[in-house]
Length: 164
Image (cartoon, rainbow, N blue to C red):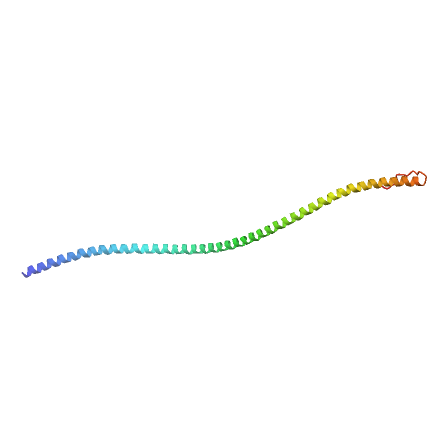
């Protein structure tokens, strides 16, 4: 009986050892699997760190570009505002010049009307002066004839002595 109990105990221990050996083998396999998984995760961590670093660098570059774009936009806005002010000033000057041109046109029209009146009066005076000159010549010739007859003599007058 003691041998039987010892053999049973041995058999139980051997089956326990083989179960433990099987568990140990499966734990070793699981451990290897975990080691490979850890290595994969470490590689992935390195890749993600590299990608994160690259993304941070891109982000920094984009922030710099955005800052430059914002500054350029602000500068452009200032230029546009300056141009808007210039356009408003130019519009005011154009309006003032249009009003001045209208005033000058009215003044020129009045002067043209005055000149037309003066020309008309000058023409009338020219006609009157021509008539006066003609009458004066006629009167001069009558006076000259009368003076010559008055003395009782007729004098020949030369054309050089007459005034036109």
